[in-house]
Image 1 (cartoon, rainbow, N blue to C red):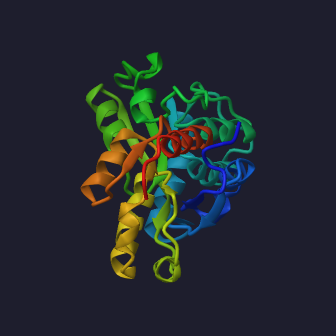
Image 2 (cartoon, helix red, strand yellow):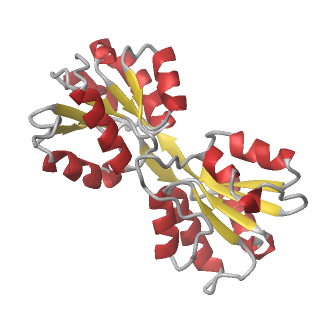
Image 3 (tube, one colour):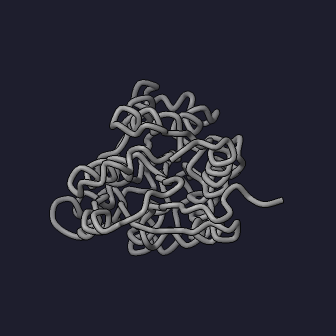
Length: 266
């Protein structure tokens, strides 16, 4: 049976170093894939911010729980941990938001308590992690959240309200690539659908659309990683925002196929 993606033009927006798997899935179903990265990840490497990271990493054995919000958080956190902890301490328990994040933790030699399946019906967000039994009553326990600068506060606020002694370890910045606006300005197509994998990517997309004069793309079906991000997209002016179950490639693919099979017009 022919995929609804066959001969459809899809615009993907993931960081360049993280887009290959999703692009391959789409092409395997006959899609024509265009890529304009709308998110760039830059590690924090110096100054007071780097010293704050160093201090937290040196105290890593004092934490009961370590939460990683993304693959990028795993990469940069373990790069620091490798410098100070050639053998990981026994104390912390590891948690991942997302199946890919869990795999990244395991690849660095630790075993995540949370190992969400990348199934179409499986959410992989902060709310799902907060429902894990070990995090329902963290009264008096030290928790570190490894993440980028800024981002959602729901998890931290909820854990603090539950009595946790919470600290953030902010390891990287999320930036709009320098050439993104010019790439959008030069992009001559109206794709059949657009995929954004995060709220930060959505914000960058909206800013770049305004600067590039390509507001016509607001009318294209937009696939988002959650209902929360889809709601934000509608508030930003996207006319046809749809939610996947999670940000995993398989879930985003399923949402794309569902939307295009239903005949949502460009």
